Length: 123
Image (cartoon, rainbow, N blue to C red; front, top):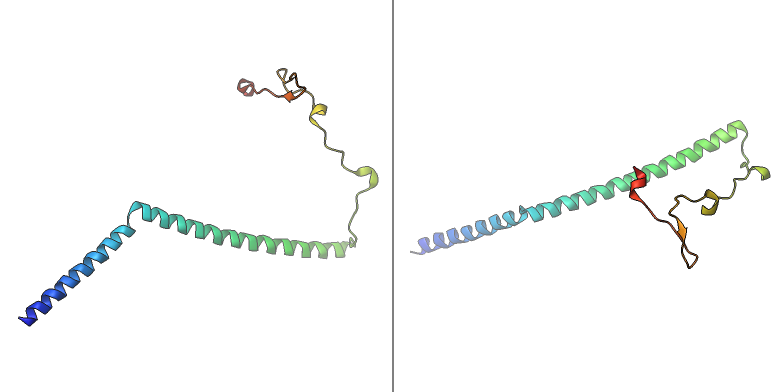
């Protein structure tokens, strides 16, 4: 009698354990959980890729500066080149210097310039 009770209890415990295990696995395989896992892995991969790209860019920049210094030394260009006084870039032009873009562009009664946009002009 004791032996039957032991095996019945052991079987019931194994059944509960297996059911719990299967239910956990089924919850892990729901579409929502799979999407979350995929998104997490994609974010992690993106972070790793970004870190590697930053390291690569820093290495390239350091090697570029080193090579530029070597070339400058070889060519005798040790001093930084300053632009000539008469060769400065012109100041950027404002909207008024560019002229009106459209005949529908107007100034309203308050003196504020308004720009109308007609989609059909793009075609």
